[in-house]
Structure formats: structure tokens, C-alpha cells
Length: 158
DNA sequence: GCCAACGTTGGC
DNA sequence: GCCAACGTTGGC
Image 1 (cartoon, rainbow, N blue to C red):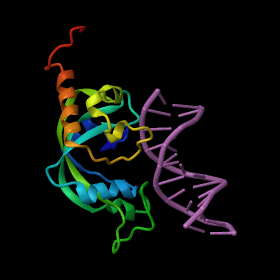
Image 2: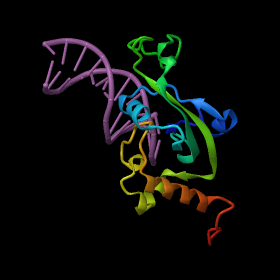
Image 3: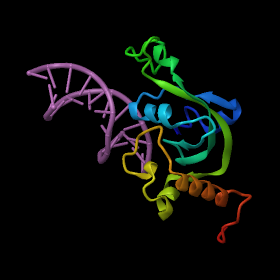
Image 4: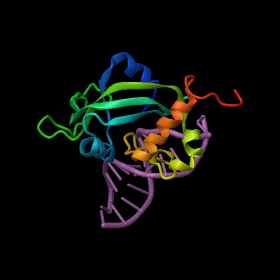
């Protein structure tokens, strides 16, 4: 799941413990949340439009998809007049903080890993804010985060 | 700030 | 249903 850290970062999630993931206004992203995200699923928390951009930590799905009430609020930035209480269009899930990586696993690092070939987030023009991640890719990213962390193995050059 | 890659909208 | 115009995302 992507978020601009200026808007909502892994630190914000660590502080809040959990949050509702509102504001998704893309049908494909909504469908992934609605159809594929189950309570307990782990999530890569990705910082987009950031320095550095990349995976900043892990979250966990805390509630399955339910209507996004912010779509009904005319004063909300993500208001959508097409969505109604009776027939909500947009959905959100709840996510809980799981872990903040010692260092962000950057997009550059993700792209440099042959093991991650085919991962959606490293494709050109991959704008979806909610993306499925294959288990092998997920494990690879977590392994990279551990390698990067201060507690992990030191790099020979450092 | 630039711009590629999309998604959406709306005229026809 | 086609497609041009427009808006948004997000890397750089």
C-alpha cells in the first residue's frame, strides 16, 4: 500500500497503532482491497513521492473492506457524489502497525534485485496505490530490510 | 518543475 | 463505442 509520507507515513501509523485506509478512488485498487485483503494479511507500507521512496515498513490488515464514509462527506477532499449511503462505491480496510524498517528499502534497490523481476511496483508507470505482492517478493523485500538494518549484517564497505 | 503513464469524462 | 481532452500519480 502506497502513501505519501507527507500525508501519512509509517511513523504516523506507528503512533496511531492502526488506521482506516480511506481515500482510495481507483476501481482496481478498491477491488484488491475488497476481494483480496484478509484480516491478518501483511502489507508492505510504501512511501511514494518521498526521499527516499520505497518500502518503509510493514502493516497488517486489521479489518476487511467496508464502505469508505469519506466519499459521502462533501467537505472531504475525496468526496465522490456518485457514492451514496445506500450504494457506496468506495471501500477501505483498517491496517495496524507491524514494523518500521531500520532503513527504507528504496525503489532503486527493489529494481536492482533480479529476484524481484515482475514485481508490480517496479514496473514503469505503476501508479496503483494498492497492489498485490507475490509471497516470494514479499519475503525478498523483508530480507532486504533485515540486511539493511543496523542490527543486521554490516556491509563490508561501511 | 517536468513529463510519462494512466484513468476518467464527455462529445459525437 | 471511439477518442480527444483533461486530471492525477509519482519517479526523477
